[in-house]
Amino acid sequence: MIILVNGKKAMLKSGFSFDYVSENRLFLGRDGYTLSMAFPLKDCPENIEIFGQIHRADVTKNNINFECSIISGRTSLFGTLSVVKISETEVECQFSEGRCAQTVTNPFEDVFITELDLGCGPTTDQSTITPVQAWKSIDSGANEVALPWVNENSPSVPNNWVNLESNVYTWDSENRMLSWQPYLIVIAKRICDAIGYKYDFTEWEQSPMRHIIICNILYTSLKL
Image 1 (cartoon, rainbow, N blue to C red):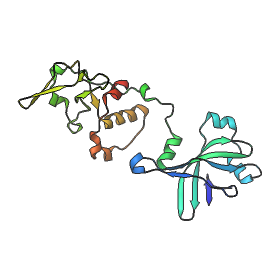
Image 2: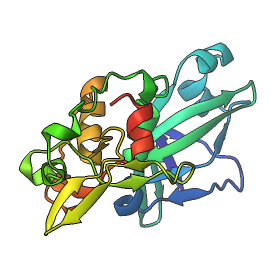
Image 3: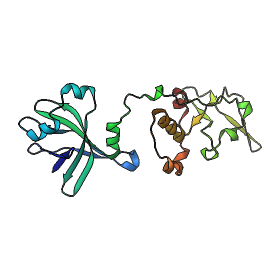
Image 4: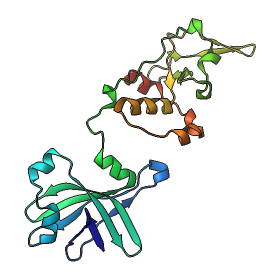
């Protein structure tokens, strides 16, 4: 096995091995990563040249990352090596590949979704809109829908309840107000805009997944 860190060959412990986790990218949108990798420093000038100027205080305050390649037989992995812990004898790291590496180098760990300004939901009165209008698809330019739902903790309180008479939907008189469920893709775009992140949504926009909505409880807690 050969491990290159910033283009330099890192020396490994005798009998060195590590666990590598390979994610299903199509399902989770992530690639692979290792749980832990340790490189010796004591009496190892090659690794000292790579890692020797890092101090424990630096690891605590900042994310320290290196370009890394792992080559073993016909398997080649390319990604980011992040320093987790360092001592006089060894440096402990985590390797991440592809989209996992992007998460490590720019994780947005200090950005909380409840602190983002993602806009507000409509305040449309039900007397000014029909159920059919409130159920517009995202394909018709809608950002959210007001579908009927029931809170299991308050089953007697209807939300966006409707009646069907003569093949025409009308709002139930017991409704207190309309509550809206936003399309997931709309919220994803707003989050990206709020944190200054660019993403190509073309594939999502052309798939049936564009019709996924977020349930009311999330919509309310996010102030959308």
